[in-house]
Amino acid sequence: AQSVTQLGSHVSVSEGALVLLRCNYSSSVPPYLFWYVQYPNQGLQLLLKYTTGATLVKGINGFEAEFKKSETSFHLTKPSAHMSDAAEYFCAVAFSGAGSYQLTFGKGTKLSVIP
Amino acid sequence: DSGVTQTPKHLITATGQRVTLRCSPRSGDLSVYWYQQSLDQGLQFLIHYYNGEERAKGNILERFSAQQFPDLHSELNLSSLELGDSALYFCASSVGSYSGNTIYFGEGSWLTVV
Image 1 (cartoon, rainbow over the protein chains, first blue to last red):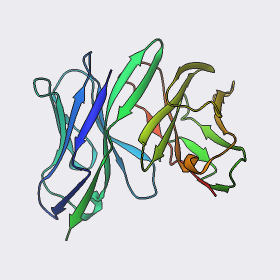
Image 2 (image 1 turned 90 degrees about the horizontal axis):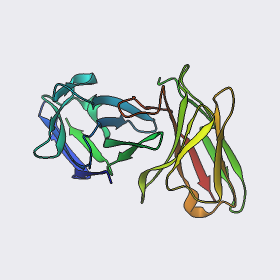
Image 3 (image 1 turned 45 degrees about the vertical axis):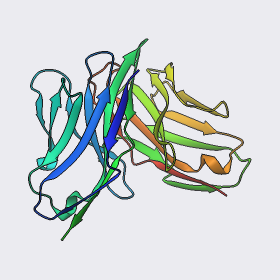
Image 4 (image 1 turned 90 degrees about the vertical axis):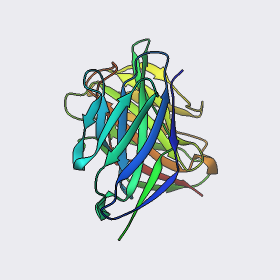
């Protein structure tokens, strides 16, 4: 069964500092991995996804993530935090079987950016 | 804007009542998913439909049901509501039903049961 663990329910960084949000997954098959962002009172927006190929994935708003199979990790990074990055971030692993396809989400990490 | 439309955005209802949440997927998407987001359970998969056919059920209560219509819109019916059903309900859609498809989420329907 697939599962996702996000380390740290709340992360605070200073504006301009590196953002690092951690995600570890468990999957019995090669995983497809996603990061979504949820701004206050809004839906989930896809930041980036890893399916196959290049292990360093670039997404929107300057975010990127690296798939490391040996570490079963898919950490999200951004070199320099902006105030507008304050939101909740969710890592997810895709699961498919019997004609269906669904995402299993981590519990989320709330990012605060300090001016 | 993801292209997934959900109505209503907010809903307040009493315990024991029944409500219907509506979802229009992105143009061209055949798969519709329903997720529940609550403080204690996080984001939980409820159910998946593909082109009108139920494909998978997750943590969906027997009091809840869903369907996808020929025009591909979907409805989630919640009945005999309890206080614990208060949550944000997301509809999402994707073009197909295989891993790697991007799943696009709507802005959600906030349900408050009082």
